[in-house]
Length: 116
Length: 116
Image 1 (cartoon, rainbow over the protein chains, first blue to last red):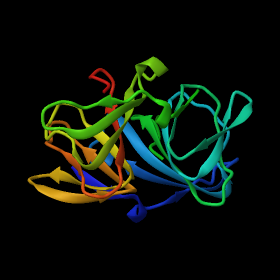
Image 2 (cartoon, rainbow over the protein chains, first blue to last red):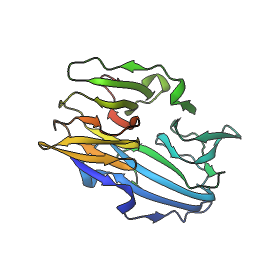
Image 3 (cartoon, each protein chain N blue to C red):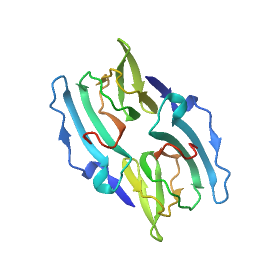
């Protein structure tokens, strides 16, 4: 068993096109012995956003703190602490922080694709 | 895409032997189209605990709020908001709420075993 404090993990700035002020942390992955799925934490500064994209793998998301919006079928929908989001394979999605505090969400993906 | 407010989900009281004041909610499972892994949320009232057990499937856990302890290799270890926990297959584990507020954690498991 491993207990991980996310604040002590290495951070990776998402510098892909279309991203702004996003930090990612790999919480649990194959180095921990996890062979089926991978847990990451993303942190968006106020005004920050992830790239709008789609891909083969699904997301299971849980909003840990803050307030934001998610791009869902051509419109922006509010999400906040305590919301879960299922994003199926190939569905376009984008998160943005619309609040004044950091917007943090856990995002789980299947193994076998880039972990972060 | 589905956006789920956990507060609106049906709750299931864990009444298995060795559990006290635990409520589970199925956040994302096969009914949502999730075919690889399943996301649940557990809520322990102050003084509550999950059963001490082990099983074939692993857990990937993220502590959403509150303060508790996890039974890890014969001792109790504190965990709190922002901690992630990887529990490998067959490793004995148990959570308890040691605080004065509800203790909530997200727990992801592979598909193909009981979802909640």
